[in-house]
Image (cartoon, rainbow, N blue to C red; front, side, top):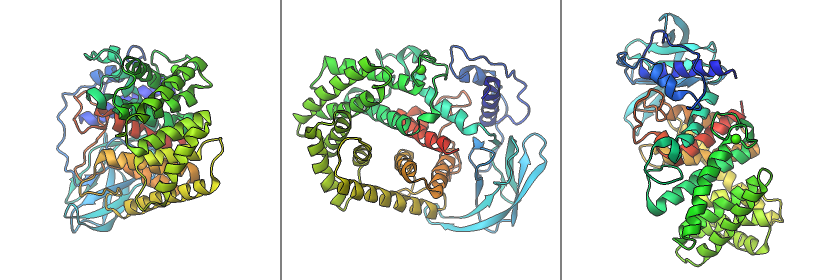
Length: 464
Ligand SMILES: [Ca+2]
């Protein structure tokens, strides 16, 4: 994609979320420089003084928008609605599409009737909003062919901003995360693990030219971001190798995975990662309070990396119990299972067969439940928990990578639309587009959620 085209898109998005509906009148010649994605400059150039129009959140859309060839569904709240809805051009206010309203029934959670409308056939790039007599207008949104990629880049760029030298934060080194103490390191490990896994499965969407300090060094920039924090975690491991066993368990798993992925890129760094993984594994083994599923995950990662029977025996013994048990896989069990399935070393074929069947059945159940929900996402509680939704989507993405099911693509994309505004409150949960401070509930303010979000986007993009 040409840089100016991406920048023009960005400006449209900033304008969109800041509520300005007229022409932005700003230059589209923003150069990529200190701010790698040009986001800051672009945000500053948008006139935020426009009055934000009062929009009734009874017409719910992805507030960022849709790609031209994607399925586009709008959700309406309310009873006795008109039979049709219209899509209008945000600049000219002219009707560009008329669609039919399909009643969707009563939503028990929120106590209201829901209907749907499809405007998939509208593919022309532009800025639009949806209008319906009686209940009003939706927030404006874009139709643009590079929308998802632009947004994916935006999410990845958050980690560059988290670097201590870029964020102006007070903590020495590493990402500036809100968590402190032990939880800080554990959360960082989860983030890196999810990013590394996304890279391994969907490497085609990651490039070496996103404009960060390490762009052009031959290593995909997402791995450079991971390495930045891995280096900090390595320092912590050297200062205190035997701290909390759970930290050591996470460290063993994430450094083993990093070593595996860096082997062909930087052998010396991969070797350092291996050392940290093995030392951490030993420390974790001394602490009987470390969760068993974490020990399993670490063993699975180390077995894939090294091929030693010691790790294989521990991983297989645990996995036999987990696969035959009646409980669903925990996140760590799920990740460890996939690693075990992905190893080139010897595996128990019967065990693999049972593991993949269980993992697929669990995802199939989740997909079925999501499709039956009025907002097309399934959550255990009444109110959807974004962090939980995103972790669920990682599982769907991984299974979809293995079996490629169009229905799963749709469910993943529906979750994206939900998080971007097609939810009961019409909130865009990844909204750092308008220069305003992030809300606490924003996906971008939580690196773990953001890494899961990037995972979801990487899968969506790899199928486009
Ligand atoms: Ca790079």
